Image (cartoon, rainbow, N blue to C red; front, side, top):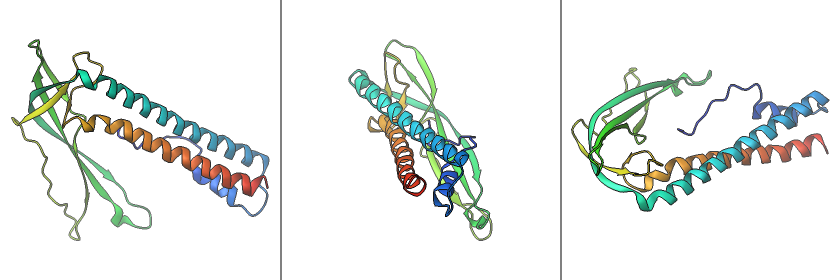
Length: 197
C-alpha cells in the first residue's frame, strides 16, 4: 500500500482539536463526536501497526526460501500526479512523477513470469519560475538486466532491487500506524484535560 491514504470520513483530528480548544464547555454531541473520532483514529493506528507487523513477519519467514534470478526490464511506465498547493500558497503545487518498471524473468522450472514492480522511482517536482518542470530520468531502461528475488512458494510477490527493500512496506505501515495512534493518544489527553477537567 503506498502509505498515504485519504479517508472520505466526516470526522478528523481538526474537529477534535477545535472542541478541545474551545473556551466554553462543549455540548454533549460534540463530546461524543470527539470521543468517537479519537477512538476511530486510534483503531486505525492499531490496525496499521498490526498489518505492518504481519507483513514483516511474513517477509522474514520467507526470506530463507527466496531465489535470486536474472530478470529483464520490458518497459518503464511513467505516471504523473498533480498535487495542488494550499489556498494561501499556490507555489506549493507539485507534480509527482513515478517510473514503474515491468519486468520478466524465467523460474528454475522454465516458466516465464511478467510482473509490475512494486519498487519504482518517485520524484516530487516543483515548477520553475517560468512554469516548466525539471527533467528527470528513470533508473531503468528497456532491456536492462536486473536482479529479481523470487519466492517459489508464491507467498511473496517477485521483487527487484535487493533484499532490504522487501521490508519497506511493512516498516511504512508500522510508521504510519505509530504516527496515527500517537496523534490519537496525544489528542485524547488534551481533550480529556480540556473537556473533562
